Length: 165
Image (spheres, one colour):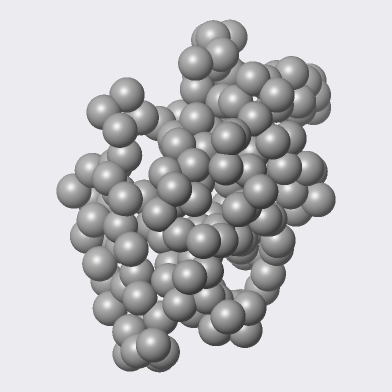
């Protein structure tokens, strides 16, 4: 069975990578879907995020079961269009659950044939988000434990460029 793991991934975190790896242990195929949201101000382009995710998943044992793509529009429609029956969502806290429950319920109304599968974040990642990574790095904090090592330099370089603007 094919599953889609949608998100912005700006940048990818170790929490995201953990969800990707765990989902690939459960499903036959996992498609990491970068949602293009014109209302969001992203640090990295879609192409850069695809490249960073590909670099990061190459370190996983089950990398052959994972692919990356981008898309626009309703995620549930994209999932159907690529033949996925499940959407993966990571849950870090109660606030995530409330948001994800509302989204999953709306998606059920739009397309009842697509299921949402929640994976609970490992305790070491419950605080971790792309926004947290950016905030720590912009204040000269160490983010080595928060982003996959293959993309650490890319993230640091971009954040330094952004600070000098």
